[in-house]
Length: 249
Image (cartoon, rainbow, N blue to C red; front, side, top):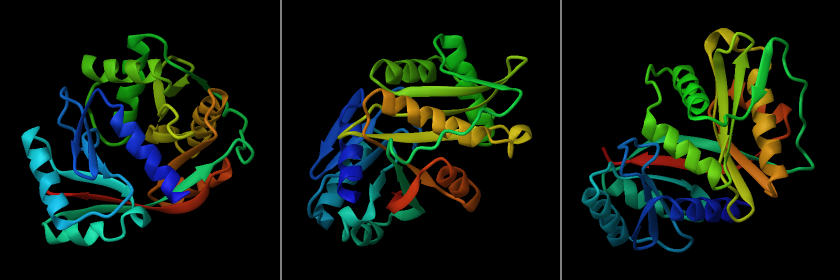
């Protein structure tokens, strides 16, 4: 599964609006934002050398972005050592989990909350702003953010929301278009006052079900803490492998 997930990440980055090849790496980037979480690289399957890392750094400098990578560690076992030698620092090590149509468990929707998919730019902005707030940012989604999500939906991705009955957006989740049969689920977020009510599990199950209905044969996501881990396992995700986040600031 490690090689399939890594191949899926390579494929996803390769279909970004702007991509850059740097030896064995592909850089997916967006000219409209300098966000380190949008602009990053991943290695293709195969050996990587220190010279390849130097070329990667130069490529990032040419587009004025922070050199940063996300990848499945087993698919490039020597890469971390080369990156550390070049001055990179580890941001996080996360275990990823996978789910299949046969393991997915869809819970009942929590009372007092409605779920759906945004179809207008106003709705997309509302979901994105709610996700930002849940992650601790006061950033209001702008036109470029909305356009990015609209494009993702058009290309086969899925965005879902949780909304209070008064119309307040309280959370959301995003799944990318399937690549090599797999869809990555990200951005699962719920506002603090609404947590521990089953909303995160409902969002995770809904966005996963949607991508399976669209033809994905599997879905994967990452857990960064025990609480999120339990949420994902309850809806049918199981631990599968490890990923590394690393950057040169």
